[in-house]
Length: 421
Image (tube, rainbow, N blue to C red; front, side, top):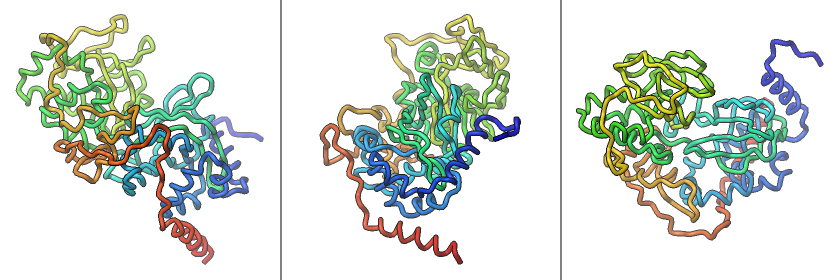
């Protein structure tokens, strides 16, 4: 079969799998029920009749379906309390985060991260144009990995199960909808940045602004300038931090930052992206961790402060870390500045506990907090919710067989009948 040379390999694969899906004789229900390792996911999905009905009438959709083993891991993750308490709106958002518009066959991924939109568009949980994204990359050995909130990684274990409306990929771990910035920073040891944002009265903006891109100095960068930064008036500190916040109509994922990209900051001055010696730089600072997803965009961790007084600073790949552009005195005894300004609810976040945990996570949404929401009430929230029911290692979260399950099937039937009129 001939395909025009203008078609990219990803487009070619999408067309191929679209034809393959359309030729499939099994619908979504049959595809799910034919795989015993998806029994828990099937039960969960069919309990949300509107989502299930919508999926049944899609023509080109990709479902990242957690297998039964993934359900065993729920009590040990930040998703546990929400599932145990059957907090339906939160679980709904988690389900939506596992559904990608369009066809994304396993072979369409390569060694460069792509960031694909999902059905999660509820502004209570995300503020990214077109829907929150999930990262996808193919690693050595043709192993596909999906990344989500809090640095969570899910491995593709069974790819490209076709049904009439698209394809299903089976993954080994649930995707986690990304929390906001303040709730995310402790997970990556960026507590100084989180506290500084709070002190400078920027938390509301950073947590809620649409399509935000942040370049976040690590704790070591704060420690190197700690005495100077701590003694700054809030307005001066805000000016420096504003230079680390990008205002743009698109989120600055690394795949959108080719060499030479110029970005406009909240401070009104530009940043320049450089790719050299297999490393990514912003001005003179080296990016040491890329593409950490947050509720309203992305953040990249850098090893140095950017200075609004030196916007023309350039990268020197030969240096492990460039000298600070802002003069200051380091703090002694490994003191991390600004951490006292962080809300107490985010100082001990744990997303992968050895025992079932109800530490601050998605269950707190709707209780005055914003684990992966975009609101601002999380700043004064308390993470005190504790599960009253402990589970032994390996015990599966029981997804309630809701009485409304039959309504899903009824809704599908009604939609089918209406389609015939």
